[in-house]
Length: 412
Image (cartoon, rainbow, N blue to C red; front, side, top):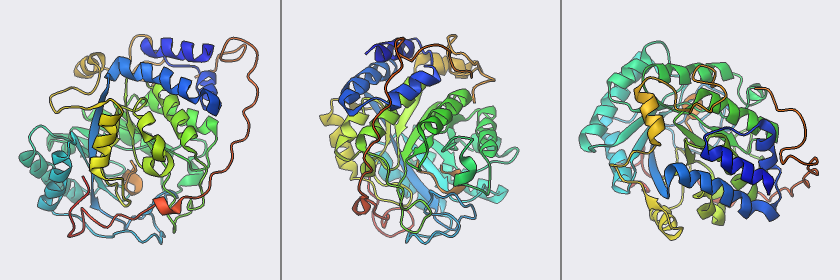
C-alpha cells in the first residue's frame, strides 16, 4: 500500500504525515490491519527497538474532585463506586511505589485528583518524591496534579520530579463538550509550564469518547506541536455513574489503528499504552506492543488492570523485553536536544520548538492541509464502511479495591 510506504519513510526521517495521511490510517479496513501494524512497527523499532518501558501509577488522593470531566470516575457528581480517600502519607505512597518498581517499573506516576495543587499540596508531593527516591534508587518520578500555578513546576523539579503529566485528552474544538470547568488552553499552558521548568512533558489523549476521526487527528497534531517526550494513549473506561457510561464505540481493530496513527505522527516519542487497554484491545494487546513502546503495569487509578505478571508474560511472549533502569528511553537526538534546551523534533519538523503545540485523576489526569489528490497519490479513497457498534463489555470494568488507599497488597 503506497500510503503505508510513504508513512514509514516519513517516520524513519522523523517527518510528520499530512492530516490527510493520518486520517487515511484511521480509515483503513480490518483487512489491512496487520499491514498497518507492521508499517507502524517499523517506525517504532527504528527509534525504540523491542524495548518496553514499564510505568506504575500511585493514586495519591482518590475521588473528591471539583472538576466535571465527563470521562472521569472521580469527577464532580460521579456516582461510580470508586475508592475515595484524601492524601496518602509519603511513606504510604513510597510503599505503594516500591511494589511497582519491584515488578519492573522504571517510572512511578504520582496522581492526585483536583483542579490543581495548592502550595501545601506541592509540599506534600515534594516530600513523597523524596521518600520514593530515597527508597528506590534510579526510579523516575512523574507528577500529575492538575493545572499548575506560577512557580509550582519549578518547585516540583527542585524536589526531584523528572516529569509532569497533563493530558490534552481531546480536540480543542470538542473540548467544551467533555469538560466545562477548565479549557483546552488551560491544559496547554500547564504543559508549557512543566517544560519551562525543565520537566519532561507527558501529555496524551483519551479515545472512545464519541469523537470523530478528525478530532483524533486534531488532538494528536496538537500534541505533536507541544512536543512532549511521552504520549499516553488512553481508551475510555465507561464507568457506570459517569456521563460517558454508554460510550462503547471502540473495537480492538480501531484501537490499534489509533495507536498506529499516533506512532506515525509522533515517530520518535514514547507512546504509552495506557488506561483501558484491557477493556478495548483485549486479546489483541500483544499487537499493540508493535506500536507503543511503553505501558502501565498492573492497576490504574480507580480501575483494575490485568495482573502484573500477565503484563510481563505478554511482553516476553510477544518477543519484546522490559527496558532496564540503566537504559535511556528516548532516542539520542531527543536527549541531546533537551540537554541543549531545545525541542526533541528534528530539522525535518515543519513547526519547530515554539510552534509545536493515563488514565489520569481529575483535571490532572489525565497547519494547513496539503492540496491535491488523495493520500496515496492516486484516486480518492472510497468511504470506509460504517463499523459495527460493539457490545458493551461492562464485565471488563472493575473498580480498584487494592493497593493505594487500602490495606490490600497492590497489583504489580
